[in-house]
Amino acid sequence: MQAPTYTYITDTTYHTLNDELAHLIAMSFVHDPETEVIRILGEVGGVWPQSVMDDVEAQKS
View 1: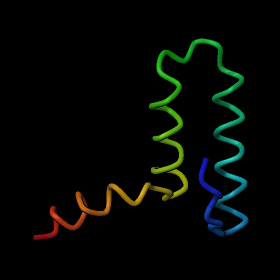
View 2 (view 1 turned 30 degrees about the vertical axis):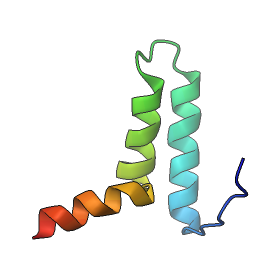
View 3 (view 1 turned 180 degrees about the vertical axis):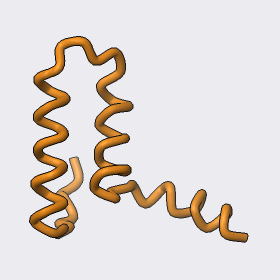
């Protein structure tokens, strides 16, 4: 496993992500937890993998 790259986000965003993810874990009826984690990281925290940068750049042109 590769060592993590540290990324610092605002405390507000961090706590919002933490709250959303904790809520997700507490929900026993989530049908697709992976999709929910992706949604929370991306839509709530603005955290995306580098691989989506190509898609974003392609949409701009």
